[in-house]
Length: 356
Image (cartoon, rainbow, N blue to C red; front, side):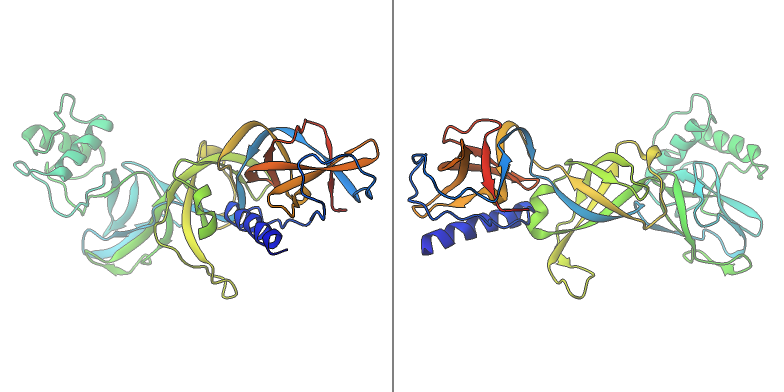
């Protein structure tokens, strides 16, 4: 009996790791021989079929629809905030983020911050970023993109300033542009129109414009969410879209639920086609992690497994009004089923299961 209990515990542990969450409920009291002779034992209360097909070890978890990369946009000049982009709006390259004393600060793409006024002779990655944006916007034909602010760079800046009715100085600083990695979505405003702002004071809180899903995954299920893992996401309107795991946190922390202190790993999911993704920010969604897939294998419901007294597992095959126990080798668990082999099982065979 101890041996049988230990075997059942092993299967339950496997199911916990794979997210199956199903206990073995059918236990055999037979002699444990592989493929025993036909006998007139009582028939099981219900049957299921041995199926052949692809089996996935995926799991289903709840997630929250949101946006990537939250950042703060600080003021680049002192003065009165006279306008700012509204919450929920999207700002792209060369569009206005906010205005101080009526002067717009426009968005340019780049990972380096705009921390100084650039002029001829300056060198650095911020110079390269500026030149990349000027070329992308069609200013400065033939401008060499490098890390040196040349007279050609200044000429391109003057063209840009003229197009926006700015004084054509050939210099540009944080009072005119702000760098962000890409287009941004305004999450909230840090200051109200009419407020006094100063360099370093937050004006806007932004995120990336790309929709993402954030998931808090149990540590035991962490292996099913490796970077690049394919997923499907069920949106609030019931539609399903495809995506993949973009990042997996390295530090497990307790969940937000005070009644569940199970360590959780933060996971971020991105979409293959973000344009198809609708729904309000912070809406609940369901994420289906595909995990590993075994192709063209035989599988049975997990609750069809019998813990054999002699060790190992089997299933109860039902044929011609009789039953026989067949020992099987277990493979991958997933979707409430388990891969099985051995015992001469065939697709479509009927096996005993507990009554639904």
